[in-house]
Amino acid sequence: MQISTKARRLRKLEFRKAIAGGCQRLNQPLLPNCGSIKHQPQFSLQHMFFSWLGAFLGIATLAYLTSNDHPFIAAPLGATAVLVFGVPDSPLAQPRNVIGGNLIAAVVCVMLVETFGTGPWVMGMAVATTIKLMQLTRTVHPPAGAVALLGVLTHASWNYVFTPVLAGSIVIIFCTVLFNNTAPGRTYPKHWL
Image 1 (tube, one colour):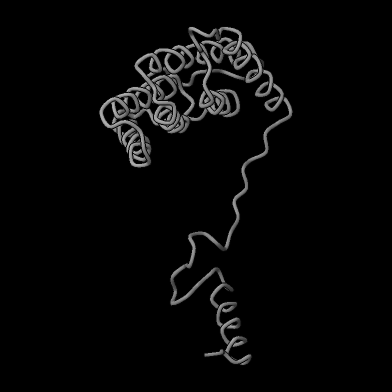
Image 2 (cartoon, rainbow, N blue to C red):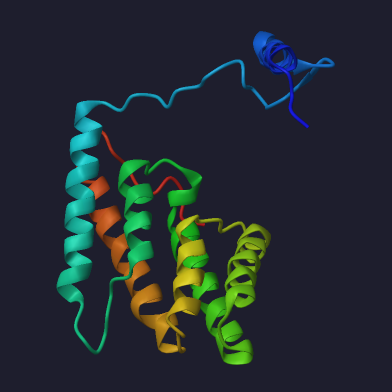
């Protein structure tokens, strides 16, 4: 059954009317806040420079300390660097969240891998359980989701908890405290616990 040209035009017109006026249809928004756009605030050039320099020094330090036997660096710590150097005032970038969230994620993924092996549902369970435990302990740290996922993907053992996750988290916090408290206009952390 073919739709006539007139019917197609009518559908397009109805769709445009539904989208117009803040996405209202039956006085309910089609998408939340679709009528307005909120932009992220602009960072100063000084803030951007010190974020760049801090991340460079922090990740370079982790890479320097890494050896074949004791890796201090893992990809999720790059995301941690974005938070602790880019938005150090964020509650998600505080030491309790970084160390606690990453540690929870590492323990959860190792327990699941040792109990159930790996697979799609184990990956989902690792990330979901990590989120729930971080919420319960008030240690939400988004890169910890990647810590959990990476642990399942790499069949992590208990060594993963200590190196690179715990050791890397402690080193990045040490670098952040050192750097952000010596750079002008920056202080870190806002709170320890």
